[in-house]
Image (cartoon, rainbow, N blue to C red; front, top):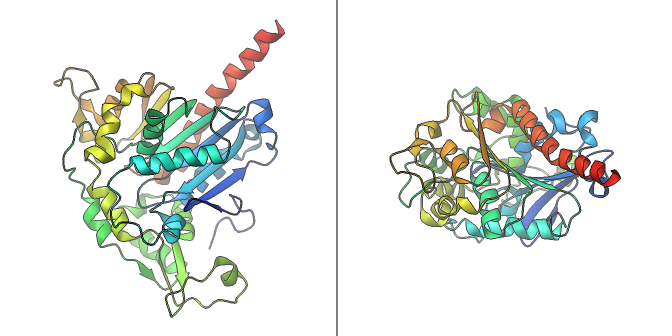
Length: 354
């Protein structure tokens, strides 16, 4: 059963150059831009999508004490994921240049007038895994995109080479046809390992937003028709093609995907908070920070924190999928980053009064 049946978290999505975007105006914060409330952009991990963020948002960012500090929340599906992938059926099977979705991200911010150059409100970029790469890349491509960054387990590596990612093989073979959404949820929830570590609501968000109903002819049955009983769903399939998910994993360590981002981390100037999972395999990947002695190696995410201009780091008791496993803890981190953007605004007002 959907745990959020009565209140849609995000407004009806809209299309932007082949992308599906969800916006959410936190209740009571419609005037956020005029009083310095913080806008937040959420960039998802590979293979997931915008729906996996809703538990994190619902956890704290809609609480009365936080509402007044938050303006517009935006979550998207990159061009090869989720609903966006449905709009782009003729994409190349593998997206081997991740600067493309980073530029997409910049375009979305400008279209929504959330970019700090056009908005009166500060902007926090939150990214996980593949999404954290894009948040960092957007800042490298266009300095001043973010006022603060929260990068969770970013897929960023310091050199070109084939990254041995075991998840790629699993993605290519992932089951992609189910009898119902509940069947998909129960199948993933019952398997030991990856999905069992997820918070149940995070997994439900992934199921509700990540699979789509089709009829006997393979045509998509709209959510509206399903809700009104007009459409007959024959089966449910993954919105994100397995080839795209597997390709992202397989190419994660190449120069066009992440190598160039690591090489340019010193161009990331906003305060950037890095988050690592204590059980993540990434903690075993040891690299030297940008410009440091090659022998001075440390866990990759800590090296990234030391490579950006103003980086901090913390550990969360989770595997790589930190937001899905610990949505409440991640929400607290995001709230903390929001408050750091609010305080300077209050100080400026106080100084003006003096």
